[in-house]
Amino acid sequence: MPETDGGRRRASWHLALMLVLTFSTGIVDAVGYLGLDRVFTANMTGNVVILGMALTGAEDLPVLGPVVALAGFMLGAAVGGRVLRRAATGWTTASTVLFTLVGVVMGALAVVATTLGDAIPVEAGTTAPPAALALTGCLGLVMGAQAATARRLAVKDVTTVVVTSTITGLAADSRLAGGDGGGWRRRVGAVLLILAGASVGAALLRWHVGAGLGLAALITVVVALVGHRTAHVLRGAGGASR
Image 1 (cartoon, one colour):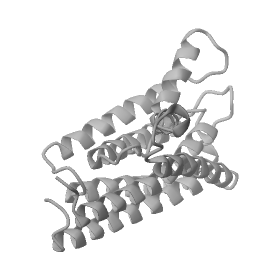
Image 2 (cartoon, one colour):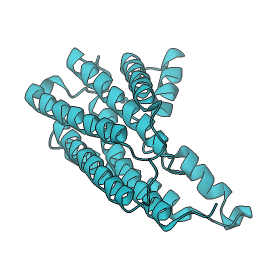
Image 3 (cartoon, rainbow, N blue to C red):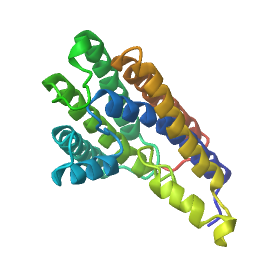
């Protein structure tokens, strides 16, 4: 069946909001990698690769941090999947609740990181302190929940936490590869936004480890509120399914 005007508007809003979350993910991963012992709290591929190298005896590579991040991420994704199991595809009240919780928890972590100060940053080659590991686990947890919620929205090429598949699609479907180049704008946008987010996160880290988390938290809460309001308006206009 052809897509309705309401369906197209809903898809456009979902795409825009997930692109914004992709930007905030770049911030969070920059904070994790540069401030928390070279650990990714959203991009789990990076953690798996780091662990693989570390387990072969490569020097000065973290092990505990990536393991904690992986465990937290999987738990958060499982919780998100459980909550959304019976929810309809698309933006629902459960989506709003989960995204809001992600933002609120990140905001709380930003406050904790600011309060703890020098107990959080980890220098290369040193063992991560308990405070840094706890922050890593909590960030992995909320990013897993975010990824599961974004997955339920089913925005093509934009998962908010990884861009490898997005880059693959961009190249494989390009005119150079014999394709029609469809979807290149969203794919390029996702790559550039996570790049920009990482740059902003790295810059804010020079000020304090909590600064980037605070900005990411604010962005996530705004996305949750805008998404909830937009879904309500479209539903009222008959443009969104329940």
